[in-house]
Image: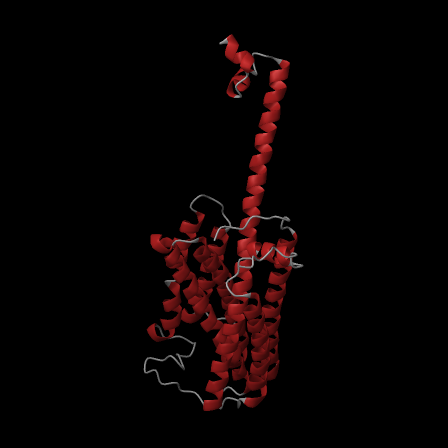
Length: 45
Length: 291
């Protein structure tokens, strides 16, 4: 693999990892919101 | 004086109120969305700067372009673990103790693990064309791998329930943070394959070309925005999960209490002597007269 190949792989991996983690959080947040009861109690701050 | 009468309820007001209660977040929704879009735009700009605008390195050529993601990822890992340590210290300090700090510590540690993992993989990808090896057992690489596994352990510790979970995790986070300065100064303390610090060197004299330096600092800015955006999201998730666990616990207790009451009622119906205690507790007039 050439230098450019390593660079492209690295940058793609960075974007992919950050994007995948963002989507993972969004999916978990959506699931958590769906499981909220209608008059859910607030978690203690 | 004119008295204001309660008007018709605004549509969605209740919904917003409920969401506001159940979605404790570090940033306001509008500000968080703005940070998210700014982070996305900054990463796109960083790609243009790092892949086209910045010149190739005189020695390493194009392979050096990995620096614009590797170094910001490493610095953000330091920042994330620093925030975890600070939040843990604030949790342990009795005057500032709050579950907010425990959640911030957990959320930031997870992001730190993501950035450290990214640093290790990107370093390996950079090392192959420049050093001729994917991995070397030397101080900087090994201390970074240790840092990664320390915080994976910390995240595992957070999942173990118990009355002193938060306190135990806060102490573990402070102990794990000791590895951060070891990682940073490893290139100064030991003779390593990894190059010495270019920007934060002992003389504090950055040995880097102007455009390269600008791109590097822009990368740090972009990654910081990503960190702030994701920290807020992870914090929200942590708070919602805690709320769900509390609700499930309350529900389980209520179910057990109800089941115990049913058993007691059934026992009373079957044998008056067995249910005597329960009737006495409830103030049965028949029982009182018997006594």
